[in-house]
Amino acid sequence: MSAVVAEGLSKRFGATEALRGVDFEIERGKVLGLLGPNGAGKTTAVRILCTLLEPDAGRAFIDGIDVLAEPRRARSRIGLTGQFAAVEERLTGFENLQHVGRLFHLQTSEARRRARELLDRFDLVEVGNRVAKTYSGGMRRRLDIAMSLIGRPSVLFLDEPTTGLDPRSRLGMWDVIDELGRSGTTTLLTTQYLDEADRLADEIVVIDHGAAIARGTADELKRRVGGELVEVVLADPGDGQRVIDLLAPRALGTGQVVTGTSMVAIPVEDLTGIVPAVVRDLDAAGIEVLDVGTRHSTLDDVFLALTGRPAEEHAPDDGDSEVGPEAEVRALAATHQAQEEALS
Amino acid sequence: MTATQSLTQAGARDETPSGLMWSLRDCWTEASRHLRALPRNPEVLVFSTIQPVMFVLLFAFVFGGAINVPGYDDYNQFLIPGIFAQTVLFGSTFAAVGLAEDMSKGIADRLRSLPMFEPAVLIGRTFADLIRNLITFVVMLAVAFAIGFRFEGTLAEALVATLLLLSFAYAFTWINALLGVSVSSVEAANSASFTWIFPLTFVSSAFVDPRSMPSWLEPIARNNPFTIATNAVRALYNGRAAGSDLWLALAWAVAITVVFAFLASRKFTSSTR
Image 1 (cartoon, helix red, strand yellow):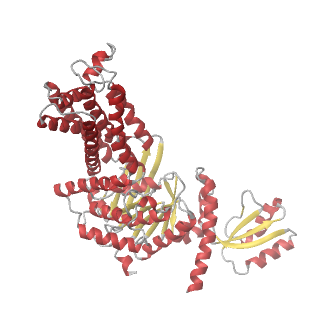
Image 2 (cartoon, rainbow over the protein chains, first blue to last red):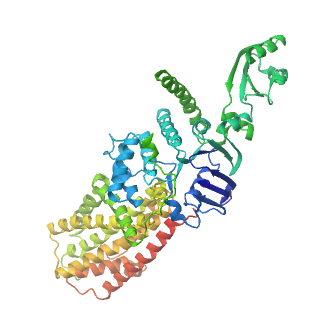
Image 3 (spheres, rainbow over the protein chains, first blue to last red):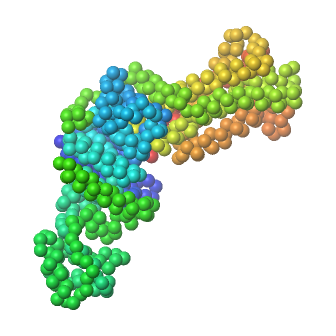
């Protein structure tokens, strides 16, 4: 039996169709990434599964419990970390945890014991007796997740857990979620960050305008646009179509000129020996290139292929702010990984 | 990873215990969230102690000598119960702001996703506000005594007056609770609650005799439930017969509490938003 089942979830707010018949299941112990831009319907789906919102149509089950029929029973199985760090600023970290533990109807001594255990687990022992108002964004988020784990839920909901965090805190949060995932916490993670879903989720459901438009593992999704990409930077942007045609025999799908650049991206199956081959082809055709490189395709490419638009364009609100931190996070992640490898 | 493994559990669990005792405990847990935070929030303490003291002193010294009310030799004996009533009613607006904050910060969602007694969030809040209003009242009373205010009646009458005052303010806390769970932001809650509390408390008998008002305003002021409560409280503190005002004010308090507690709880627990 799947830990979470969503069947044909539909919800309309006035003229907006937030969800249009979305289905998904989460196997016990797995992390499902619900990936989509702002306003795609991710939060609406989470709110329905967490018994906060009634769908217009469809059904939802947590551990086989119908959330519409028995919301209170369902609530004893779930932990919710919403979009905003829902911590009581006027209470200390310890008091926040204890408070939620008591509302989960744990015995007083058990609530205290759990609070101490979670402070320790989430690196908050030193600040446990400070009021949460003084916490940094990353500390608040960690406390927030700790609070949603106090009742030992069988399913954890993380709604955009890294939105609004600085790059360093975001990496810290990734480690926390990664570890929860590895320890077998059934998790529904929503995110608008493609690299986040790629890194943390076992399976991904891409949702756009209230409908699931693709699903699979990150690798499966990437394979839909070709697993690997060759990128050619041209001296003359006008050569784009010629290059795409010239390299078509080596390509897996159709190459594309990357909008606004003089770069052509060609999906291929295997990178082995591809660069010399491409350079020879281009040289023979007399096309001047500035650079030829390869990279693994990302979920950005998937989104582009699925919707015809890059993911960031969907979210004009924070489109600008996303590009900077995203790139920064990737750079930091690379350093992070290099350090880890050096240590081990 | 053993520590992490114990963070969640994969198997089926028993349902979280519930029942009347657990519901009451939830109410107390929620009330204690606010009570514990009270001494840590200087703004709230200032608003609930220093500001009322200022009100008593300003009104008493600024208007005290200028206004004559028929039937009262000393205007302060007339005015101070009015200030008490107005101040505790102002105190009822904390619920609107506090609940709007819980709603907008995601705290309400977190609480509603727990297997708790949901109305406890509102009951705990209103109860904590009642305690804070009691503190405010005690501070004001001390200052009022210092500038010469006296209970002219029996201690029992003064006690009944105080209970009526606080239960009337408690009833209004529920109106503000409904506001708090209905509006979209903290700022909206703040302005929305004062928008009706101000005229309600001024177009009343709190500071002047309604007979001194324009003829179109007088009947409004006279029938204002706040006037009825103020009149009853004032009469009791001054050892005079409160008459039907006492029962009418109590009826208002009970009716407002019942109706608005129901409406606010229904709004808070509804899952249509």
